[in-house]
Structures are given as structure tokens and as C-alpha cells.
Length: 281
Image (tube, rainbow, N blue to C red; front, side):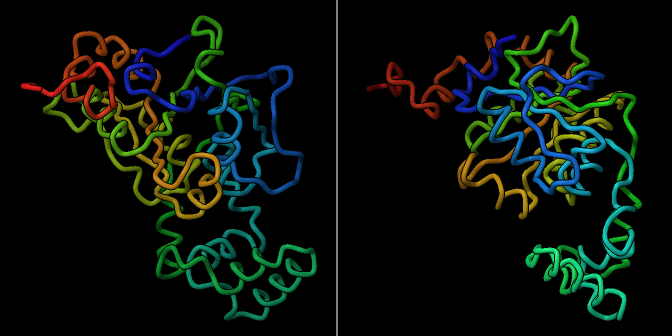
């Protein structure tokens, strides 16, 4: 299906649908089993550019990606177990002999950057205890599907596909427009929120799954994950953010495009409409 929203905001990339499926579309891109990869980077470089990609419990790229896609608590399989992940996210695993041995093994396997981060920590949170609180608060789930398929929205069939949400990759003006549109019917509610502390893939996947189950679902602003920004910058540019909308909310927003601010002068001027003239010009 085509998106009125994408047309109205002048979206440069394809809106991306997240679909739960039990089969893989023919020709879908994906990671090889056991190979590292960034889920959000693949979504940005493949689905947002017009092709389809798919992930499974054997091909989710990294532990956080498996969590973000909804394949259970994949952090339990992190080097050194979940305690190793707590140290990795915080101030490192250098304090114990076991941690130093694991880091050495990772380095000998050729992943020197990963070994350094494992040993010294990404330092995205202050302590391992804080990392545990963060992990405990995630709405972990094992989805009732074999695959998570990401495809450009124009490739989905709403009658056949089990669509969970739609992702827009946008810069500030378009992000502002999407926020206004999400609040168009019910401006008294909190219809958009920052994803907060979360991996980029968790903001578009796991956390959006939870929003879809709420009585009053909200859109999520993401790509606040510094690592994800590093891996998507060459594809999406320096200023991109993600805006993820649960499917039913997306359909309502699509209905609201016509006769909204998206067809009025303020937005048209921000969009750079060559036919727009400022009042009095």
C-alpha cells in the first residue's frame, strides 16, 4: 500500500512495515546464522531503500537485536552470560579474572573492538546494577512467529500480512509533522513519546509491540541509541530519527492527512513547496 503520510511529508526513504511471519519472502536479505550484524542498519539500508529483509531466532545479528525483534531474552547467551552483558553496557568486565579471560578469547577470535567494549564497557549506564534494572524493565517476549520481516510499506498486503507497526526515518521537520499528526484527533493525550533508554532496534520493535497492546497506543521516537546512529549514519544521514507507529494508529493517521495542516501554508513552506508563496508576497 502507498502512504498518504509519506507523500505529504516528502519522505525521502520508504516507510517500513514490521511483519510477523512464518515464511520468508523470496529474495529477502538477512544475516547468516551466527554472524554479527546491526538490525537497525539492515532495516535502514534494505527495507527503507525498497527491498525486503527477514530475521529469525538464528539470524538476528546481535543479542540486543534478538531482544528487540522479540525473540526472547537473548542477553542470556551473551559472552559471560547476562552478567557479562550488564558489565558490557556499564563499566566493563575487567574487574574479574573470568571477564578478562572472556575478553581475551573474543579478541583472539578477531573481534578486537567487541573485546575492548566487553572489557572496558560501553558505559551507556553507570553501573552493572543499573544495567540489570534496565534489562529487568524491558518487556521481553518470544513472539508467536518464526520470522520478523521488514519490508517497504508499498510491498505489504494488509489482508495477508500480520503487520505490527510502521517505521518512518525522518529529519526534524518531518518528525515535527508526524508528532502533530499523531496528536491531531486527541491533542489532550500523550500520543507520542521518546523511546528512552533502548537499543535502536528495541525502539522500533519490542517497545512498539507493547504500545500496540495498550488501550491508548503511542508512537515512539527512537534512534537515540548512539551505536545505532553510528551504523545508520551512512545510510540515513546525520540528523535522522525513527518514528514508529503501531499499525492501527498508523491507519488512523493516514485517514487524518486530508484537510489537515499537511495541506496548509505553514507545512508547505517548511516542505519547500515551490508553488507556495508567503502571505503578502
